[in-house]
Image 1: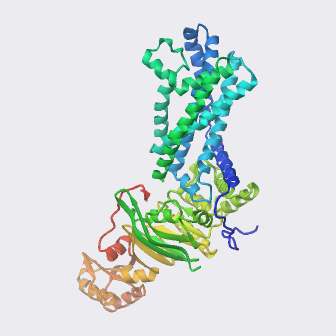
Image 2 (image 1 turned 60 degrees about the vertical axis):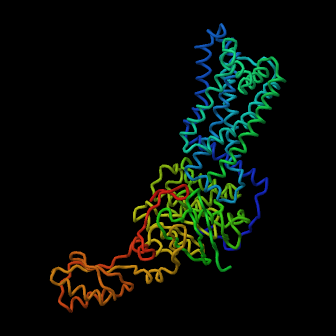
Image 3 (image 1 turned 90 degrees about the vertical axis):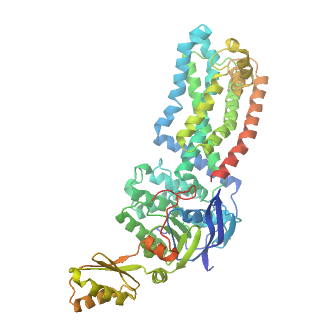
Length: 271
Length: 322
């Protein structure tokens, strides 16, 4: 090619709609874009790397002895729950990214291209799953250094990671809704963390529930964070699995059923 | 086909605000239509409907013969969009932004990279190719936006206020780029608040106000209708004012406005300027100032609508910049 031409000389071949394979490829490209952003903004990497490590260290060494007798015992109890908590926090990047694209105009550019309508969202979520896998691996590695050991099998561990990713996928819809409702990216973080903190702390992630008042325990028992933490503990350390795992999947289905239509509705109002 | 872009009776409401109250447009293939109007007039909403980003409440529009609602995907394969709201990703570099779009359009990675380089070279951005877009100056950023809309070699290009907020030099550079595209055969829909910009670039101008096209025609027709220029004369000696007023009045064919020492009259023909000099010289008038000034959008508006430009600040529909 010698000169920069802007128009094709012949009539372009137009396709009536996007094929599934093409849409998936576009999703991959948009996921790549989200991950390339991390390279330009290393702070984001520290957000989902240093922060969870800090949580593990703080809880294990500051509260661990007081709650469980020794930091080592506490780590065995708390690490699966911390992984759950971190997973929920990381899903907020989906809403944050979508909101940034909406407010900065990138979303309109993408929608003016012959791209599958679902690809921008699917690309975000795919990139998020990569971040999730990275965070889980990092937390398990740090846990291992501090003395955490898998008490079950490699297969059960894989099951735990799979369950966490499925739940992350479902919970992303909460994040998407926040991203659609919030006026700017700062508000996404504010809404997201305000909503997440009580749900995460009023659970059995950090402390055994016996000392909580009865009405609070009733909430803890149905809190999806508790149920997912139980399932993760069961799969990583040992204990009952079938009940909490089924409960987690049920909650994931409920979250999708409620938040996916709400998100789509808000999305249509916004653009 | 005759009209590359065509719209009839477009209506769009946002709550109580009527952004479009029945917009009719037709852009002939290979030409530039300038959509001229103030903030909040409905320019951006019109472009968003024609770019398949927004569904109209009523009316029809087609691009390249394809309906923007029924055949949105085909329309998207024909158009390129550059505007205040259709932006590049500012965290990515210039190259990454263009490669991203190429990849989304199904271009293999090496070809997408080659195309990115070609566009960056054409838009004088090669030195900044590997810098994040957020570090670009205003003019560079607009050029990257324009490059991004050209990755897919569009047949129709929408430029939504492409030079709003740019300094005069960057504005001229962008105009040259647009002229180059038109020479390549691209059909352009340009929205602008500047009469001068529409005059420079457009084959036809449609003036839009309150969601309706209130006048359209070639720049010359529009100028003839509105008196696109004013002749201004200031005599060195105040006693010459009546003479100046009568000469200017005779040439312009209307009674001139006298404001202090300055005599002003709207004129259609720029050829009047030398005639004015000759006549005033013959009358022995010493001139302190003599100028032919382009009418502003304000004056065009005043003459078309009888009311001055009001900047309506509603809105999700229109950008608030400029």
